[in-house]
Length: 445
Image (cartoon, rainbow, N blue to C red; front, top):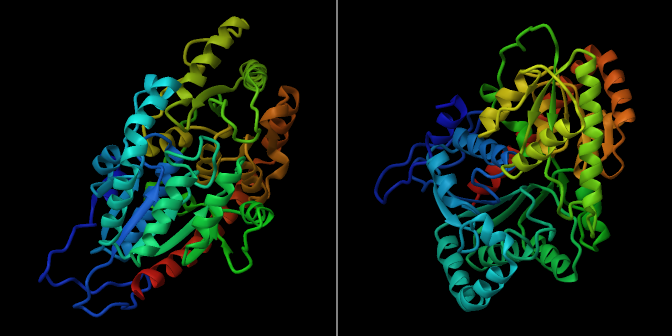
């Protein structure tokens, strides 16, 4: 079992009536509860469960810090894939919307989805509200953490604005504290989505945002954010024990990590064009052709299970465009977990990636990186790291410009690594401050 996964499964045991709970201490050693106090019952709400490795890194970070500071707490994860989350982390789980993830054929069949919603979904929705109330009555705090919840790019339902609003409202009805922690927001295209996002946030006891762009986006929607804080993405607080420290094996050629993404939703455009995705892949083929000709090897990276399709498209396009290379020069090992992604990133010298957390985790490992931006959060991340010049918009990706950025980055590697290390440590310190705030909210009842 990888070290971090083992840590994730430690602690978090439920305490029965009459059993004496140990004193709960903060990371600074201060007592916050009397010895006889009941350990806190904490709900974690998000799009979790072995699908998107960026979301999983968020959950792992939050779990690690909660267990370190509140080892006797009872943690329940309310998520989109409760079975996978429960097996991976040894915690209690509940489905976010009463429905677990469907097979791909079902997700792609609009008629099947409509019939199921009409026959099963709508009639059973009042029961799901009651289920949410029953669960929240047993919790002291509900923490909503990142994971693309405050957007309607995949619709209002599932893990969209409606589910967030439902659980937020029931939390307040059940007198359960509601914390939105380092969340991002947008895009939100529909009026209903905007109203639900603002209503859910308005119910919160505490709100913090992943970046200034999120705060500005919500301000532009007419939501009052004046007293809200901005803290970095929670993945910057992954425990240092989870970060591989083995040096990159020195072979004959340096290795460039290339993060691919299946781009087809409305992440940054109301009406996405298939031409953008096709041009994106073509530009990366040109970039890889140049890398191979200049004695670099390439490791293909992904950040979500669906991105395996993009890898297939890309490898097929390399063959179509007659990009020839020796065996082993383009490394394609499927990513299976956060731990596996971190290990793969550790085996690169430089990373060029599209998924937000592919770039973020590369920076956490002190790897110079170029971001292919599909969403404002990518630009915000690179700006916060002082790396704005190493970013390109996916809708206008140009292979020649990418090669220029790569060459410039290579010239500045020693200086960039110092900058990245300094920024990552500052973000970790900022998140320590936020965890102190979270602990205070949990422990003050």
